[in-house]
Image 1 (spheres, rainbow, N blue to C red):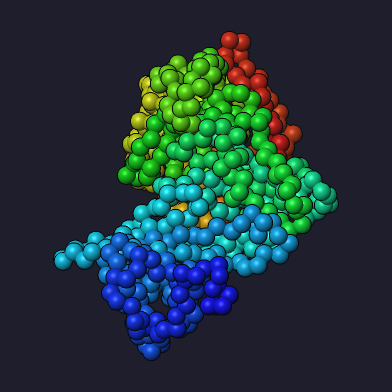
Image 2 (cartoon, rainbow, N blue to C red; image 1 turned 120 degrees about the horizontal axis):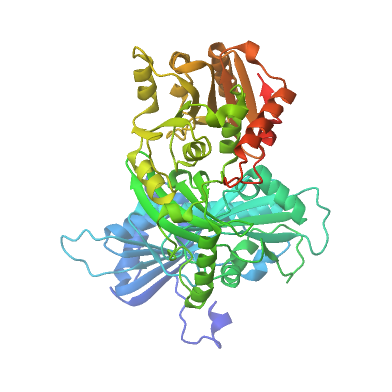
Length: 613
């Protein structure tokens, strides 16, 4: 080494020395550079090895000046990171870990050299402060990003492990396609908050060509809950129709600021190339796709936290038909729309004009716009957004003489209020109906009233109670009320169950007997069932059939929801033609001149695929 560098670096010294007992005086250097020595020495966690490493690191601390830095290049295996971070944090040093970025050439080379990322530990020596327990841990995961302060050594180790897992995933995605469902969050480099959610979708049946290797699809804000974007089968269909071997869908998170498609493309271009498949031609441009070429509109109108339902938001989003929709989202299940209502066109038009006016101001994507908060002025109450609500209303055709229902007093019990769209629609379209709505969470009544146009009347009463307790109380009374219709549209708060709607207690046989006792003999019990566990679903259907001998099932296309229509007397069974005829009769009655009705809502279409269990 001396001979090789004698002419080019005459002032550089090459010394042979024991790193655990160096001959330099104290505080001799401002930087100590370790290019893999710690990794080479700390091969295991035997006592002898750990003692040797302690001596080495103690010598590093001795020869460094206050303010000096120990810069160690490492693969950051768990035991190495634990030792280095633990040693220097106990000494009161600032600990920072940088991920060393790969060159773009290495990202695109035919065979990546190494699947594990390289890290640089930067330990800064502080002057000891007696009695101080201050510890500083930082991670810098991007070449130009700001370091993120972390609260503990454990959290730093977890963050490094996440980066290693990401690198391993990238190498696997490069080497082979068809790994199954792959999703990941990309977080803001400054705050650590999730900014993008990516799903990798491979289409092995697509014949490869020069231009169809890889593409990125930006999902417009607010549309990530739609089947095409939010469900695995939908994303597969999207990828197949796009015609690329690999498509990455990108969902934008609420609470983040996005300037537009160009800025998103600039921000993601380098990162998504790490997820590219093998065989891409060098320097090939990767297309960024979207619906209509923009990133959509999301306006958060209200955000709060309920003791029962947790954190939630009310937001307005633009649909593919340029209508605006108001949605209630529980953040514990942020890809599921809890309630939805369409805004009136004049409100949408004003919002659009204002957005164009403010576009140059580069306001945050979810900054509230000046939409009216008076619900009666903004909500289209004649429109049902949710397909399962449309099917539930169509189930009223099972009541006899549907052509007379508008003049017939109807008693309905609806368990689960949400935004109130379902009971409000029935109230407004069936003028003789009287509705009891039961909602366990008082916050939801406030949300429905303020943001979704819901209001109580002499025919619409809301009871703040547990639906189980409310029905049990009714079933135990003498002269108990009898309902023509009982509807369950209530979600489970326990995400670990295979059934998210309703909670299992609502379909226990003893409780179903109580439901039966408050239903009129000719009445119908309508239940929204969301169950991914096939064994559990079979058990639920068997239990329902034991109490309600006549059971119809209507699957909601593209969703997990199934609507169950339950009646007491099997002799009331209707063949499909009769059922459709009754639905048509009811719709004809509801389509009165001057009465608001959604022309796309065909009641009989809701019942065409009904099957008898």
